[in-house]
Amino acid sequence: MFYGAKSVQTAISEVRPSIGDEVAICKFQTTRDLKLFDFSRFDLPLERQMTSHWRDDYDRREEALVMLKYLHRLIAQPVRTEETDYIMTQAMAEFLHYEVEGGFDGITFGSVQDEGGRNYAIFDEPDRQIVEFPLEPFGTPIFHRVQKVEFHGTWTQPHPVINAHDSES
Image (cartoon, rainbow, N blue to C red; front, side, top):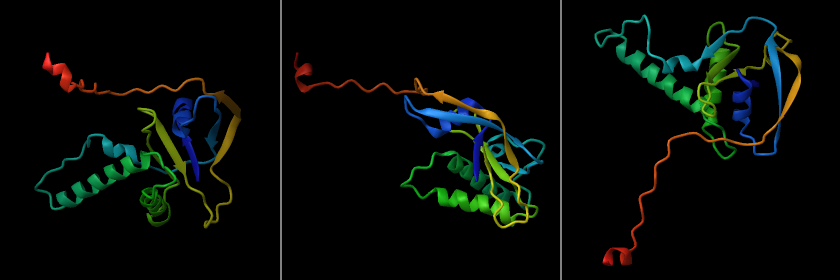
């Protein structure tokens, strides 16, 4: 399995380095057209599809959409060694690769480490007749030494602590 990102910033963010770490980045190019399953599409509003409670398949389609959105969030989450949630996402990836007619070469999904970033996972071909992996390096690796790590988000101010003796005055 090959894991990659669309941008250098996303690639570095995904490996979650510490200050002082050195990260090697290399660009890759495809050697053939790839068929990718895009999980991030399920977070976008549905376009050009009339959906209605009156359709016979409405409940089934809504349930499938909820499940796919959940899988996208799960796939995008960082995997920690003590967690087993990745088993569900691995099973889904293998289903897309081996069981869907025509198969997918990989998946693409949003990054939770870099807002707006995009990640790619390209499947290996151990059981198929294709011997050549569909990616090859383009150029030479570039090394980045991490000098600072930034955190962005919304922070809630803690409530002031009032000591009992403060209210006695």
